[in-house]
Length: 101
Image (cartoon, rainbow, N blue to C red):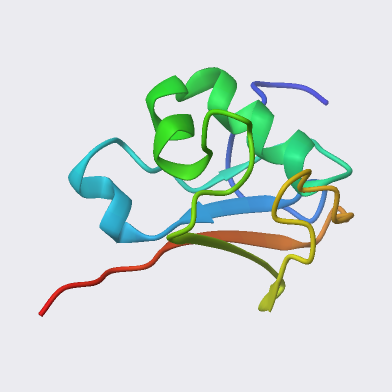
């Protein structure tokens, strides 16, 4: 594909978006990227935004307890391996739960 890995949303690649709650800590761009699984798409994003990885994944590479990932509005089934398949027109949304009193 011509151009950079990340760019304007098109139907050619999955779109990855992050909740604005993460923006308090690190930049959270919405990007399009290649990847046949949630893991592959997130790894591509984390390659350019390394600090973001630590807020989303634990030391073993699984989703942190307070993070949930949706693909087209449905929560991923594999929170450890992130092996859920994604297609070119899919939307991946990374959501960080907020808590407090």
